[in-house]
Length: 413
Image 1: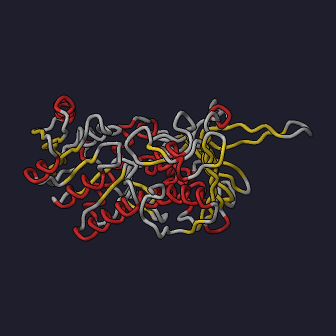
Image 2: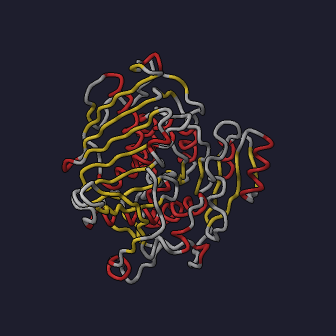
Image 3: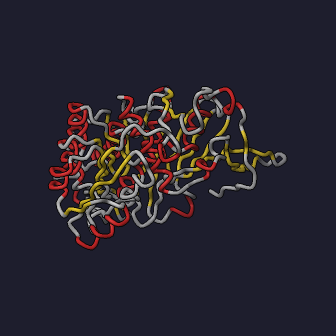
């Protein structure tokens, strides 16, 4: 689907009336239930600093590295000092120490936890197979955790670290940066306000590159399913069809992903989720279909219109304008949807640095305010649960209800 972006639509109702006067454009976010929460302004941009928190970073060069900029999430903050990094690879460790301006560096993250006792820890590797051990070690040391996605290898691991955090009153945030992007918040407001009428359907297209199918869904679908839940809540049940090399997939077709994120299945996936109020969500990722599907993202279809989100850590949103062409039909043109927030300097900044900063701002505000972060470990677990439900439904050919009873990996023997 081509997107024409020659003109933008401004919807002025948000600027003066929807935001409390005491909040600026960076202070207004929607929680997972749709309630507004005020965020602390980043001290790097002028807020008063009560006390500097000690932070540490865990990476593993060659095994997920330092994720998507998770070694730099504490940069340029006056309220956080990076005291140490850990990486078993000597060259990678030295590079990370320089980049993060860390005081010390360790080969073993467990030793770092024991000696440094940080208050904040970034668990940075993209690969999930070490996430449970790393997050557990950070929580045991008394730290709050920012974790790269995918969150965990299994739902059982996710449940365990969430329970650990609850017992110790620690806060886990996950790098689902799209949820707190200005464009995402604008889209949710417009859907809630009825801009496209009653929401009927969400169509989710994976990136459908060389990872099409199960790996696409696990690596990138975790972001997309998180956005879906942010907008419409929790799913009721799921059905799916999974194909592998032109035939119906079976358990024996499960294979390790190209990175250490566990087993995946299929190079073609079509899945449907039923949500409350009659909303249906369709997910597609099929090998060789990227060109015909268009940019990876989500399309929100209502009774009176459509919205389109292009997926990235800082997504962009478009609204459809239907133009009649005589008696032969209509032409659909996609126009940027914007407001004062998305047109601000922060809203126009599509970098991973800005995307991570928004999540970190909210995470630190959640710690100070004794609440869960918007991009919480619980929300990340729910996104992983949707992914695992697709694998279960594809293998069984039946309807899979939520929550999943089996919390192990659905593709393990």
